[in-house]
Image 1 (cartoon, one colour):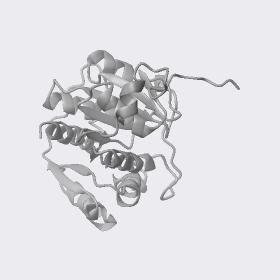
Image 2 (cartoon, rainbow, N blue to C red):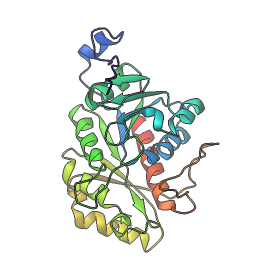
Image 3 (tube, rainbow, N blue to C red):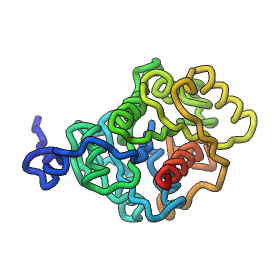
Length: 264
C-alpha cells in the first residue's frame, strides 16, 4: 500500500495559507447540500439558468468514491463553465484544491475561490444498507450542520423518485428523511418542486410526518422545464429526466432557490 500526499489549502506551504488562517465565516453564502452526486449537474445548471454570472464551486466530500477523477460529470461541467472550481474535502482527493475538512473546503470556496454559491455532494457510488442510518445520504445532514456553523445559508436537495422500484426510495427517499429530520441540527431551506397529484400529496405527507418542517424552511418552486445542460446528460441510477422527472426537478428547484438567495 502506498500513501498519497497532497498539499492542503490550509497548510503553511499553501499559497492560500494566509487567507485560510483568518477565514472563519461563509458570510451568508448559499450552499446547496446534495444527497447524491448525480444531483450536482441539475443544481448547477439551474443556478446558471437563473443567473449566468454566478460563480459556482463544487465541494466533493468523502462519503462515497474518493478520487474526484471517478466523476463522469465534473470534467464536462468545468469545460462548460457550469462550475468554476472543485475542492476535494477530507479523504477525497483530486480537486483543484484539497482541504482537510469540509469546513475548510467551504471557507476556501468562499475566500480563496470567490464563490457566490457552493454545491456540496459526495462522489459517485453511494453506499446503502436499507437501515435508517447506514447509508451515505447521512452526509447531507452533516453538510447542513457545517454550513450553519460557519454562517452560510444551507439549501437542501430532496431525493425524490417515482420510478425507483425500492419502496424506501419512492416518494421522498428515506436517505433524505434521515438526513433532514434527524442528522441536520441546523436549519436549511428545502426546495419543493411542484409535482402532479398524487405525487405532490405523497411528498407533502412524508415530509410532514417525519418532522422535517419542525427544523427547516420550505420554499415551493413551480414546475418548469429542466435547465439545458448541452451535451452533458442528466442521469441517476440509469434513469433520465423522462424516466424520473421528480428526481431532477427537485435538484433543479434547489439550484433555483440558491440563485435567488444570492440576490438577497
